[in-house]
Length: 103
Image (cartoon, rainbow, N blue to C red; front, side):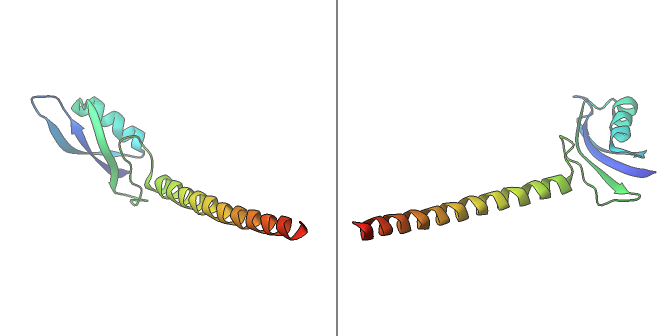
């Protein structure tokens, strides 16, 4: 079982508090924060101890690994776009040059 920590809004009387619970999953931790503490808003839920403690969760539940992969795919997409644009420009210049040579 792992220890999960989150920043939780407990209402105007208690405000935002950093809370910890024991759970096997992030969903179980979220349920406990809501049931035990009455958390109305749970932010920055992350595993602080237990197996696989490198997993980090943010407000919308996306893992850090998924975000890193998305950034890599975005970078590959951008590089591919500009590479294709450069190749296309070179093809057009060669086409224009060949067309001039034929005339």
